[in-house]
Every structure is written in structure tokens, then in C-alpha cells.
Length: 363
Image (cartoon, rainbow, N blue to C red; front, side):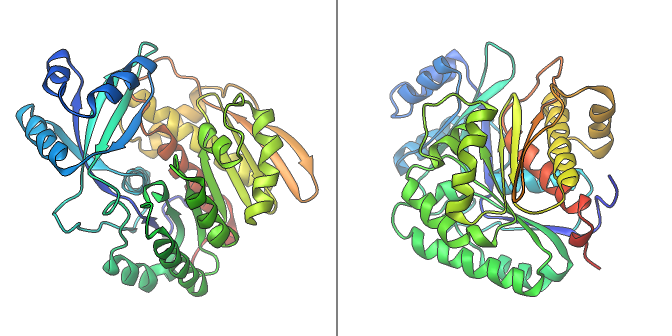
């Protein structure tokens, strides 16, 4: 795959600092009298991650606890994580939306726990959604000024939109990506969704921006919720069967659904071989990440591509204006990190798309 570092990326909108502690009996005892204790225990029993919002008093107590236990601090948030992945893969420059909330830096308190099957999951606590989705005016100015030299943009964090005032924020995003496209029609824009509390917000978002996107991505559970099919088994057949209607509803060119066992992609226009290669590259980046436990560089990704066979060969279905592709993932012998796998896959996939499509290169 050539040209991986030719041209930059725009990453928006959610970035924060993660304060991370590994769960222990002592730590659990220290938060027993807080509102998050039952939810954290339930997440650990079920072996699933979760994110909750709490009041300022709880945040104050968590800050004291995390300081006492000397929590590790890392960059967090979908946009910031994907920016780190792309940087590690050699992409430069990167323009990242990093707003400064009124109360100082935005910190998420992360409880990391081990899974019986291997790997880790996270229970994340934030201080409310009012300042979770903020568009920095300096980022707007810089991204518009430099968009001519960019070849990709990944926008995410919309699941953090507040219950009130979200329409104005969506309109601001719509205006911004229109301005990006006006200056650089070749800019490849991918939107990565999360777990929305309200499908009303998701519907308004995609109704307004869907036609401007080159690609939309999410995991299997998030897709079933968007397709109003929650509870169905997550299989390639179910994903493909319902994806066409979602694409029509929101005027989407491509949709990508990533899971731990397979990846499904559908596109209405484009180069099929490039689409398959890009999905495969994203899967390889994710495999290198969960094996290493850290964001991989290109050499580490290439070792995966040349050293491990995917769980299945790409299967192509359909024809005409809509093609569906099911790709395998790269099975790994040891799992050091599972948290963030979707963001890592997405960064690799989008980088693959702009690298595999000659029309997307900037001069």
C-alpha cells in the first residue's frame, strides 16, 4: 500500500484526558458509597464496557480517589485516539479538535478491568455532556484554512451530544463539512458513530449530513440500534439485510460495520478492490494493536498482513448499484488490549481508503 503518508487528516470532535485505574478490591471499596458502584459491578459481571455521566460532587470524589491511587493519564476520546493511530502510521499533518472546557481540561475517569476471556474492558465516568461535544473556533479556522492539503477527515463523538441544544451543534457540523467539501471536493469524510442514548439525535444527524459523507461506520450493536433491529443476532446476513435500507434512508455512499469476528461493508459507488483492501488493512491495524497493546507502526501492521491469514476470505454479494463485502478479522494468539479496537480499525480503514483511491490524493 503506497502513499500512506501523503497528505494530512482532520480529526473531530471528541478528545479528552483519560485518567485510568485498574480495578481492585480496595478501589471498589473506596467507591462503594457512590452512585457509580452498582453500574461498575454490573459491567464487570457482564464483561462489557460502559460510560455514565455523574454530578459534580461525584467527579470531585473520583478526582481525589484517582489522585490517591496515582492514576495513569493518557489521551482519550474517539477523535484523539484515531489521531494517535494515524500519527503512528506516519500520517502528517493532523488537525485535531481539542477544545478547553470552561473548568479546565476535560478528564474522564476510567476503571479498567480484566475479562475472563482475556483482554480488558473499561467503565468510563464523565462529568456530564454539556462540555463533551465542543467545537473549538481555532480548530474551525485551522481546518478550513488547511483543508486543501488534507485527504481525509474522520468525525465522531456524536453520541455525546446533549439532550438539549443538539440541533444547533449538528447544524454547526453541517456548515463546517460543507465548507471543507467546497474547498476540497476530494476530501474523504468518514463519520464514526457510537451508542446513542436517543435515536432521535442519530436520525437528525444523519438526515442532515448523510449525503455529504463518503463513509459511515459503527459496531454491530450500534448498527442494529440504528436499524431499529436491536436484539437480533449479529451476523453478516443480518447486517447486510438491513444495511441497504439504512443507506437509502440517509443517502449514504458507504457503510462499514465492524465486529470482533467479521467486518461488513456496503458501497453504492467506488472501486470494489480498493474497498476490500481498505477493510482488510483496518483489520490488520486492529490485530496489531490488540496483540501489542499499543498503537502499532506500519512495520508492525505489515507483519500481521504477511504473517497471519484472515479468519475468512472476502465474500462479495449483490451487484449493480449496491455491493456488499464480508471480510474476516486477523486471529491473534494473545490479546493484550481490546478497548479501542473499533477506533483503531476505523483509522486504518479510512487511511486505506484514501491511499487506495488515486482520485483522493492531493497535489
